[in-house]
Amino acid sequence: MSQSATPKGQQLWTGRFSEPTDAFVERFSASVDFDARLALYDIEGSLAHARMLAECGVLSAHERDAIVTGLAEIREEVVNGTFPWSPQLEDVHMNIEQRLTERIGEAGKKLHTARSRNDQIATDIRLFLRAAIDDITAELRRFQRGLLDLAEREAETIMPGFTHLQVAQPVTMGHHLLAWYEMLERDAGRLSDCRTRLNFCPLGAAALAGTSFPIDREATAQALGFTAPTRNSLDSVSDRDFAIELAAAASTLMMHLSRMAEELILWASQQFDFIDLPDRFCTGSSIMPQKKNPDVAELVRGKAARVQGSLVQLITLMKGQPLAYNRDNQEDKEPLFDLVDTTRDALTAFADMVPAMAVKRERCREAARAGFATATDLADYLVRQGVAFRDAHAIVGQAVRHAAASERDLADLELEELQRFSTAIGDDVYAVLTLEGSVAARDHIGGTAPAQVRHQVAQARARLELPT
Figure 1 (cartoon, helix red, strand yellow):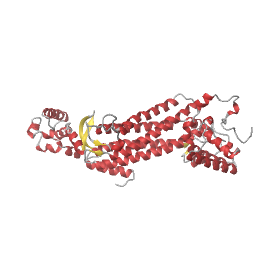
Figure 2 (cartoon, helix red, strand yellow):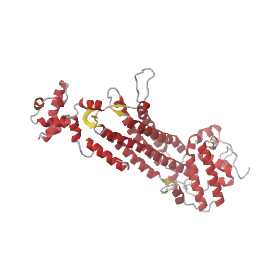
Figure 3 (spheres, rainbow, N blue to C red):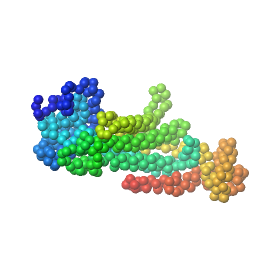
Figure 4 (cartoon, rainbow, N blue to C red):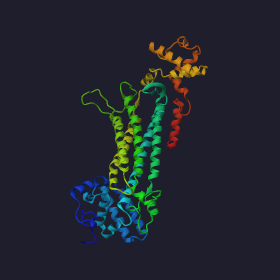
């Protein structure tokens, strides 16, 4: 057999073995069907590794240049969809190495000096997830910008605020949307924290113990945009905390989107009728011609379970593994890829759909009037008149019962009727019983007053470096 090439389709590690791999085992253990997605990141890591080896004298300049040229050609094949993937070569790393050796000969075999597939895949995944976090964050920020525009537009739109899905107090739609914004802001912080912790380079840790070759791990880390090399070779190849952390952050983000989806679904129903979602984000029924179903919101709500399932899959995958690398870790790719795609797509859907929805302002206002939403305002009024809060609470409860019996709102009761329950009530009470008076009175940091909504929109835009 020639010294310059390995037979096509033969694994590069077969020297130890006296018989070929069983055909079933070959199919069962192959990962190239899904980890081929890491090809460009694998090539990026290999380019940095080859250049570092040449700088350290492990490769000649001629060998380095051949490897760099060969990898550039392979990258073009991957991008153009012409790369000849072979399941017999197991994974993305072996496929690229074999192809490189076919193209440039002996120098291609030298690329794997001072590294292992263990540190190679750990580096590829970090490169992939770093880019994925940037993509997800970009869509999250786009959704936030749309929410800010919508919140400013609906700063004075009064709607019922709910607890236990019962009308509680009047709020503004703008205030409600800013609550969604804050949920996303925490998600952005978690993604940023995760990115900071994953941005360390495992390359050079080799299989588990490091390498005897004189390498420069700092140079490789710098070339790949990492903060620094990882500090322990055993941990470098076996750590998947960063993947689990991203899965947890994505699960929380999707939980938030699911809660938003649930409210959108309720608001779009005939029973609430607060909003009208754009037709392009809805579907009809195959049997009921009147239906307009909020399918995108329902799918986002459902896909939250999918991402959370990926988190459980990853954390369960790792829980029983001893140090260092184990083949179990091959099973981390598919849930990771799926949760990244699902989270990004859900954000894209909401960033497109939510800012385009139409708010039915009069209907929102009518709903706020229906549930005695200003009852707490009346209790606060009585407290300001010197009535103890617990007594005020009882007085307002009696007034609500009276109004409900006559199918009227508190603001519709005559002054004489209100004074039956407390002589502390004066004719100035109606200022606090109106919906507008109620929301305007909550003019403090975090309050629902229209002035506060506009102020907080401006502050949020400043934080995002957007024009006010």
